[in-house]
Structure formats: structure tokens, C-alpha cells
Length: 88
Image 1 (cartoon, rainbow, N blue to C red):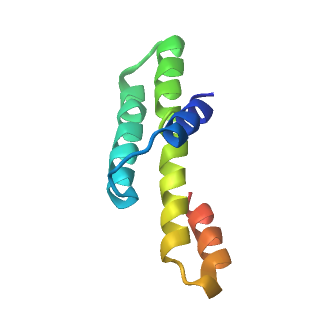
Image 2 (cartoon, rainbow, N blue to C red):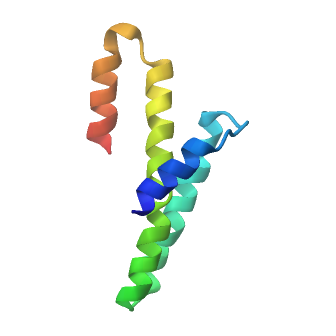
């Protein structure tokens, strides 16, 4: 649910910052609640943190997809998308 909402919100925004600069921010915001999982003992706390982390999953993946489509040579685009998804 968090990822779907994050993807919808990201798609509705028109950010001026280039995608190359958006990815480190979105991945950093994604990493913060994941790191906080270490200090949480409550299942409800984990659920809230997972939801917050989920909000940044789709924007991060969208950024990676945009970069692959932009920089991969046309003859290697399928392979580039395959490798990017394999890495995930």
C-alpha cells in the first residue's frame, strides 16, 4: 500500500530536480525507516516504519527505470532493464 501511494504521489509531482539527483534522496529517505527497524520492538511500530519505507520504494524504482531508459543504448535496452531488475 505504501509503495502504491508513493508511486501515485511521485507521479503527480512535477519535480524540477533531475532524476539523477532525486534517486539519492529517495533511497536515503527509504533507508531511514529501514534502519529504525533495528530499534523497534513493537509489531505496530514495525508496520508503521514499513509503510513509511514503502512510500519511497516506487519513486526509487521509477528513478532507476528512467535512468536505464535514458542511458542504455537502444540495442541493449532489454538487457539493461533485465540487469537493473535482477540487481533489485
